[in-house]
Image (cartoon, rainbow, N blue to C red):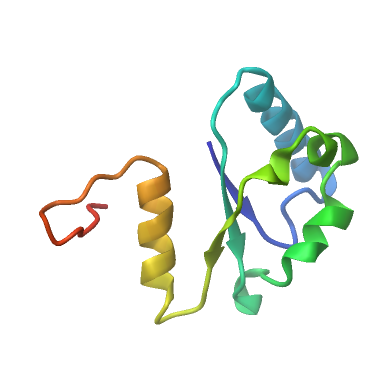
Length: 101
């Protein structure tokens, strides 16, 4: 499961539904890959936001025990996307370690 974290992630009705989905995924031992948006134009900001907006039970259950992949602004966005792809199982196309999207 890819969990995209920005300032809206767990907010409002949609956020409550997402929290329910994340709880179910964790209960089923589904791997969750966290990506944290840094671009303010896309709702990004400091990771510390998520400790006040994420439901407490998800935090105490270890949702943030794995490091989140930082999604940076361009031109570094491509590296962020490649790291996320690799975390989700993408394999290199050749020996130069290029990622296939």
